[in-house]
Amino acid sequence: MNQKESQAVNRREFIFACKRALPLAGLLFFPLSATDLILAQENEKYNPTEHNYAMGIDTHKCIGCGRCADACKKENNVPLEPIFFRTWVERYIIAGNGEVSVDSPNGGIDGFPEIKGDKEALRTFFVPKLCNHCANPPCVQVCPVGATFISRDGVVLVDEKYCVGCRYCIQACPYGARYLHPEKKVADKCTFCYHRIVKGLLPACVEVCPTQTRIFGEVGVRSSPLSRFVRFNDITVLKPSLNTSPKVYYAGTDGEVR
Amino acid sequence: MKKFRIRQQIISLSILFALLIASFIVARLILIPRSFGEYGHYRADAIDDITAQPINYAGSVACIECHDDIVELKANSNHKGLSCEICHGPAAKHIEAPDENLPSAPRERGFCPLCHGYDPSRPTGFPQIVTALHNPGTRCMSCHNPHNPILPHTPEDCSACHRGISNEKAVSPHSSLPCIKCHPASQEHMVNPRSASVQKPTGREFCGQCHSKDADSSRDIPRIDLKTHWERYLCWDCHYPHSPEAL
Image (cartoon, rainbow over all chains, first blue to last red; front, side, top):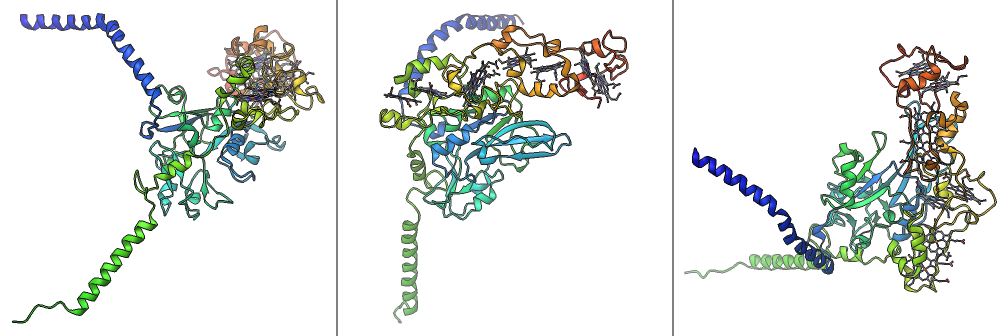
């Protein structure tokens, strides 16, 4: 009994001692972590296994200016015809009777026409769309030759030299995010601007968004702006019932948006 | 004793098989790209091909080096969230050879309304104008500096920023009520809307000042009994205050 008591006191003492020593320990570790950081910055070799990219979209903030769709085309040389998009902006109009209508003239690049008078809009808002970079992508499953794949940093990409242009993936994508490139005759889609992000730049659409509707970041990294966005918002993904595990997270959308 | 002999057929078959297997291996080597399967069921070299794509948008930090005055001006303005390249277009080539590839500047009136033209789908509070009515015929830049768009004077009317709500209210039974009757907004809100917030009515009694059976207000105003008219709910759970209807 006596022994036990003294033990307890010892433990408590130990913990208190630790508490007192904590700032000291902090001092010890601080320069270490600082050098770590510097080293990490100096080490320019990009390691894809350290990343898992994703995007957040805050539809409360979207003003539907279409600059994202415009910049995407200019960055990635997407054909200008108004049927090919890697990203585009949809306008949702929800009428008093619950009827939902969606339009996206030229992806929103030239603005949106006035809402026609015959429907009374109860609620209306903009939703930017792009490839969801699913963790469980149907497009990759159906590719007969292995020309579309998930990279080690979690981005769904197309190998345009290997694609045979069979269009299976375009059919399989539930989000309509793919198109057949009219000149190259291969499937094409959003890459999260892979050539930019591996160099530490933001995707073009995120770069030009004037209201910070689009948040680019990484899954499971606390310091990533995306983690903050996911923590502070009610998040939905598109068509969750399809079990594709999309990695584009929406805030401010509800069942009407699909 | 008979000597063991391999039959002719077996020899020719084996040769055939060996040839088949060899040609299969050769065909595989030729047809399957070398890096296929390195990281997964795809060609690892494709990653390098995709990474090699040229960059067109230089990014917002790239302009500081030469245009620090404009960058600084913009950084403290209402346009601080806007990348230079939204308006000037992709400028990576401009940075490589500034004088040969001058970016364009959007000086025409049609450009700014892509963001600022009135559209009810835009979030409330976003500054919007009705382009056809807002100083028509004059370039936006003669009154607003695109790199620091302060307003020439403080707007007099809430509709400058809350276009959607005021349009709706203007044709509703509440058209005669000024916004400040229900939202005592300070002058500061008209200048710095995000730092000076505005109150909204909080309780049923507020609407009761005019609509309660015993309220001291104009006789034309429709009355309800505050005690029995859906007493457990807030009025605006059912009536949209900017366009109320007697459902």
